[in-house]
Image (cartoon, rainbow, N blue to C red; front, top):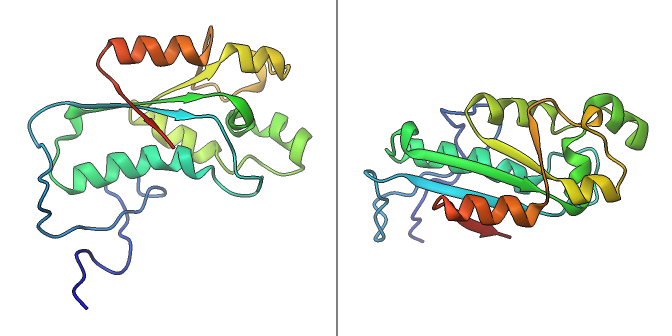
Length: 165
């Protein structure tokens, strides 16, 4: 059996605690090491386990780690997360999360680490209003937008490419 990548994931160099990746040796489709790689992740769901990090949010850490590990200069990476729907719970401060799920928010450290590396984390204001989430309920590094649609369009107008899982 010929493997194209290592068997075990490696810890990232940008965000060490999250976003483990695999090294892919000599890919046929080469990674652009020169241009900016601007991406916005549309994060509209959780996965039903309030004790685990939202894997869609963790993808932002993987994106940063994997590209820097592949040789893309960190300054060429621009990343944003637009949060809406059920994922809105994942950006709550620990006390608000505790009130809903009786545990500390497992995403708090990830949100902090991402924001420290310049990742924009944006909450849909329509989701927040519908779910009665106030500005004081959300992690202090999360920005509030008019809507997820507004944030997604504005970021795409600035040449961010949409990734939606």
